[in-house]
Length: 251
Image (cartoon, rainbow, N blue to C red):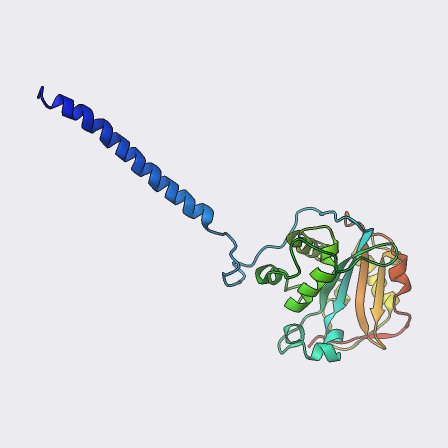
C-alpha cells in the first residue's frame, strides 16, 4: 500500500482534470448549438404558429418628415379595375378582403419624400412580408410600399411594418362599412362622418375619401408621429368631390 500511494497521488488529480475538461467541453458544445440556432429562420414554412409577430407596444417616431397618412383601400373597387383583375393575391378566387392597407406614407406639409436610400436594401424578406400580408395583401404591394415610402420613415424595416400594424389596429372601421354584401349607395361626407364617430379625436380635417368615377376608392387618415390624429389640408384638397358614390360589395 505504501508503494501505491505515489501512484494514487498522480492518478487522482489526473482523473479530476480529465472529468472537468470533458464536462466543460460538453457545456460549451451545448451553448454553441443554442446560440447558433435562429429563432425565426426565414427557411421555416410560415404558418399561423410560426408567422412573425409584426407588432409594437408603443408608437415608434419616424424622422425627417411632418406626419403620416394611413391609406385604407376598399379592395372590391381595386379588384374591379384592370390591375386588380390580374392580382390573384388580393383578388383571386376566395379572396374576400374589405378595407386593406394601401400604405403608411411619411408626408411633408406639402408633398412627400419617396424612394429613400436604406442600409437594409429594397427587398422585404418573405417571412417579414408574410407577417403583415393579412392586412396588406400582396408581396409585391408590401415591397413597393417599403421602397417608395417606408424607406423614408427613418425606421428599420421591421419597425416600419410593426408601425403599419399598430396604426391599422388603431383605426376602427364603422360597422356599416365593415362588411358589404350588396352595392351600397353613399357619399364622401357619410363615410367621413362614420369614421369620425367610430374614432374619437378624428376630425373632418384629418380624414379624406378618394374615389374613381363613381366608386369609393380609399379612406386616408392623417396622424402625427405620436399617432395622434392631425389636420392635413393637402389630403383634404385631394378628396373626392362627388356627392354620390357606390361602395362595391365584397365577393
